[in-house]
Image 1: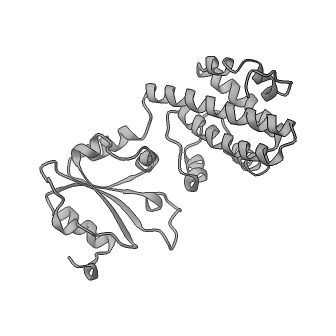
Image 2: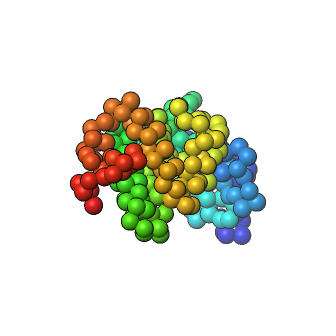
Image 3: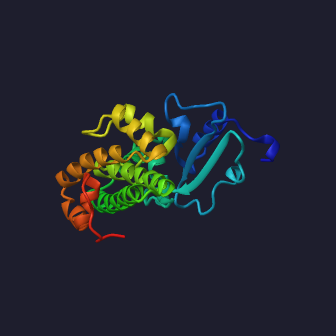
Length: 252
């Protein structure tokens, strides 16, 4: 197939379904999120081929254009999630277009949509520690009159906060473009998106110190309920500054 013979999305799907080497098609990105399609949206598609297809069918080669972006992998690669970690959310909300395995592709996809218990536990602890670190540094810089540093650290803390809250719920954090979409359809237990998102917006933009402390109070309670008190307690006297008091010099 020459570059002049590129297929539309519908034409590509029709041809892929007719090829016995193709066992699944999975659509990701804006086309898989209702209401998120823009005039600039293309079709991002996983093309899953049989393991004995050592090389992809030749007609797939080089078929990538403004309207169609393909990722071709074998069934084993797809099952073992042989893709970057940042693709996790893309898989969580991807849509099965074609499944030659009588639901096998859908089951693999469902298994990637949530973090397993150990993964969620580890991620929650790591992101909690990162959140506390950035929040503490922001409030310390605010106290010391370093306004730019305070705002930058506050913005960093909001990234860690969102990663933490989704990890606590056993979910990969959505890409920023889909954050509001995700929370509108799949709320975080115990968090009102109508309150959380404006708070994240304001803290990221201004480094609002009192609001950071209000958020920390809520996060601390949620983290302790989830069994992560040890991570918080390791911060010792520094927690006082996060709670609105004076911190000692145990963290720098």
